[in-house]
Image (cartoon, rainbow, N blue to C red; front, top):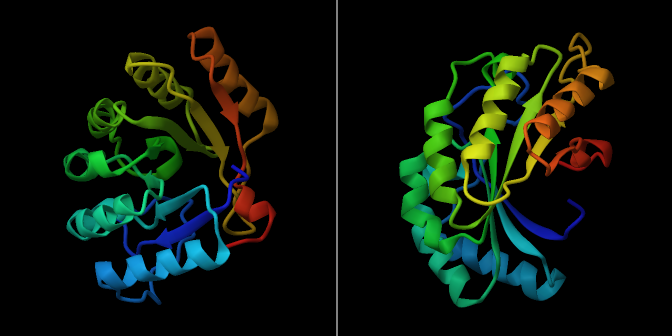
Length: 212
């Protein structure tokens, strides 16, 4: 939060969360070499940057592309920051050695309106724990305590002290009800009582700053 990054936004996602507001069209095609040249140009002309953020959509849908692109980035000693929904552990194994930081989502079923991905999340977190990693969970007015409890359990099972960020969903439509502040604090207290000391609430900063 607050760091200067180069954003590489990947088109398409394997999920369709209820609170998602990403555009599903208007993407541009790149070869790995072309993308690397554009990123390197930005680093030289606008840098230095903290890292290159690989976001989406879901970047791990493009694991084969990333294997080529990230090797080029690694040679330039630029730091890589993967933002992912944490549901594709096999794809993570293919590029884990080329990633520096992982921002992993827990997709809470009561927040997303989809099935749970606890099995995938547990495997993903186990693989990702070899790198610097933190976990983010988007919370809404519909988020249930049982989902927060499960997320806390997975964080506690992970090696080391994995930070857990609770991110209140920004309403997408005028009819969307935001999560109440006291409810957020209840979720934080659940984490603290269960020995997850590095738990915090961080809103969607880019929404506050009106940056896309």
